[in-house]
Amino acid sequence: MELLVRQARIWGREGLWDVGVADGRYAEIAPRLAVAGAQELVAEGRLLAPAFIDPHIHLDKVLVAGEVRPNRSGTLREAIEILWERKARYTVEEIVRRAGRVMEAAVLTGTTRIRTHVDVDTIGKLRPLEGVLAARERYRDLVDLQIVAFPQEGIVRDPGTGDLMREAVRMGADLVGGMPHNEASPEESRRHLEICFEIAAGHGRDIDMHVDETDDPASRTLETLADLTVAHGYEGRVTAGHTCALAAYPDRYARKVIGKLARARIHMITNPPTNLLLQGRLDKQPIRRGITRVKELLEAGVNVAMGQDCVMDTFYPFGRADMLEVALITAHAAQMGLPHEIETVFGMATTRAAAALRLADYGVEPGCAADFVVLDAPTAAEAIRLQAPRRWVVRRGRVVAETVVTHRLHRGGEL
Ligand code: FE2
Image 1 (cartoon, rainbow, N blue to C red):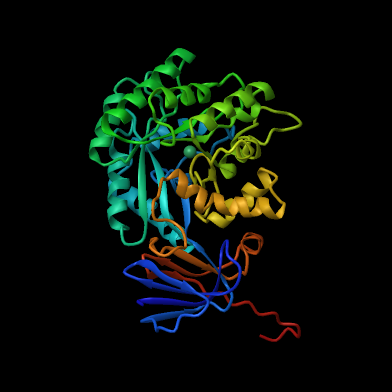
Image 2 (cartoon, rainbow, N blue to C red):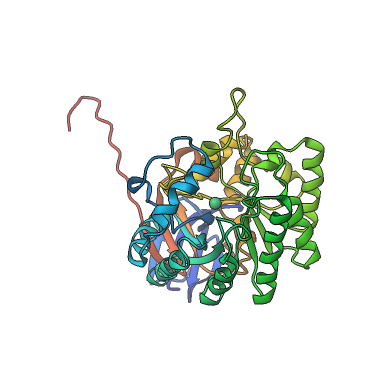
């Protein structure tokens, strides 16, 4: 064994286990392994979980907040507009630097797989993609990065973006993104969606869109996305992020849309940190939470994951790329506090995100890739409650990060 973890609790299993890794994959998992490991980690009952996944972040935009004017209205619209001028000045080197800092923070907190959206439009053109592709190369020993070509400024209303999207896919973007509600009319939103499906089907790519990121109940592109997913035979291959308007729909219409999402097997990603801050800005009281209908989607059998979305950009001034922080915020925002609900929230950063990313070799099982995090906590609930230190982070059987925290209480005042 190249790596052995002794006496770990494993998320989803009872008891204590030894975990043996060879060739970057789990080789054996048993109560006691008699073999020796080239490297051994003594877990002492800590929780071992599959490494976290952040399925929705914008690495091209991270850490720009200090260099632009503040977002005074706090709305999504102003956040997008502030970025126009900054985006036109991006360089590949600074994108690599900013994205790299956040990818390092992600790895240090237990995340080894990330899906990032990257702006593709006539302002920044393909520069953001060049930067994130270079960052992917620079960090390929630490992070698996899926890249989504994201037409944030619209496609119909931003002529030329369709061709840039096709070029982005040729350059190395893995998925086709979308922002269908950012068009001038329902007809143009539909055209936006159709163009995305044309590009995706033409290049054999999956789809991951920003859908109805607004609390306007008239924003109804999610239903069209579900219809087109079935029409194109894309069931299971489409992800919808944000979908804030789903929470604003009348209950009857929301139920109808959720039924269609289940039939289209669309993966949903909620982004509570950003959406709690940006949505409901025009409400007096009660102010809506601005996040999608997480519990109703889960009850209908729809896969739901969660993402950090933003780190210190024009949309959101906080964020540490730490999925335990996202989990804590999501549990509050979605009101998930029962024991089984907390387990589900933990799954939204692990197994549920893996399903959205369509990863075949994810999980703590023999044969799967040995990407895991050992937490300074015995359970998922305690890990979220305590925001527990990530004692070790392992990717493909190699320790890529470790954290040791020292706390001392000085009752007599002595140091
Ligand atoms: Fe987003």
